[in-house]
Amino acid sequence: MSKVLIIGAGGVGNVVAHKCAQVPEVFSEILLASRNENKCKVIAADVKAATGREIQTASVDAENVEATVALIKKFQPKLLINVALPYQDLPLMDACLHAGIHYLDTANYEPPNHAKFEYSWQWAYQERFQKAGLTALLGSGFDPGVTNVFCAYAQKHLFDEIELIDIMDANAGDHGYPFATNFNPEINIREITQRGRFWEQGEWREIDPLSIHQEYEYPVLGAKSSYLLYHEELESLAQNIKGLKRIRFFMTFSEKYLTHLRVLENVGMTRIDPIEFQGQQIVPIQFLKAILPDPASLGPRTKGKTCIGCDITGTKDGKKKRVFIYNICDHQECYREVKSQAISYTTGVPAMIGGAMLATGKWLRPGVWNMEQCDPDPFMDMLNQHGLPWHIQELPVAE
Image (cartoon, rainbow, N blue to C red):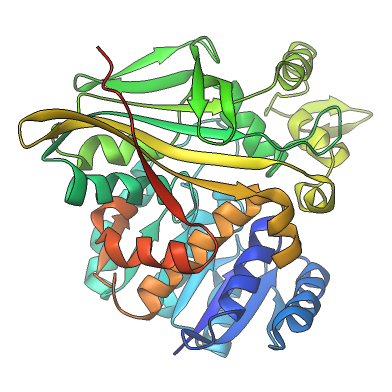
């Protein structure tokens, strides 16, 4: 059994706290911390009501390495689960190195003033974590995270060689608002409005935002318009899947959502550079975040399902083969269990499972690792046990 420190008390932090509390045989004590301790206390009360377990709470500035180190040394956890903002990944990795504990996050580092996310900053910590004898597990959410593990499972069990991967992310949920984002609005909008990228024949290809889309037939959900984006798991999977010729990422958006997004972009509300307003410097996208609905509040309003999976083509025993490995998640079922909509649930459950992989020693290996570099089997087993069952659908091979 291990103590765990969770940093971040948004929608995902709520799910991680609930799911860690459900496995006392793995996580013996839990400390939930964020800048706003009151949010942690609300989550702790919900966890107590749902599971009977007490979890501790604290206030911490995740960008302050010294403060985080002091909190770690006081609580003495085995690992830190980072579900704060991606801007805070590096200071939290630094804190783990200083305090001598393992690290896990769900999204890669983003510099606050530049809408670009890549693994280079975190991969640069490889030698430091190796020398310290510590593990840093990157991207243990759903996408990235489970999608990486799906690909690793396919490489291990279903194919001799993988050639094509399309990661498909569909949210058919309806929260009733004209416009809202299902996770942090600032991160969500930055992700969608940047130029799209995909990897093909050994190089990156770049496109205008949302300029490529396809109608994809999702299990349960049916046909949905899906738009090509850049997503961070492409970067590591392009390096770690043998024989890969192309990998892309697609996400569904309604026309209503895209219309609102275009208007906000056209009037400058998605800008990330500061502007002067009434004698003060404000960042438009941060102001927009403040007036949009809090994603953590969407749970009781959201109905419908998500479908996220990997459409994989390759060869097995000399024959072409294509499969879709996927999960279906119901927003209302998630809310009944942990007072969360499915977007937070599908990120928070894998964060707990990744933490369990480290806490139980199954994935402990000094260094900085992406999910597909670990044995997929124990992780896949825990998905079935803890609310994210997966399925494999055989598909016709595209001509």
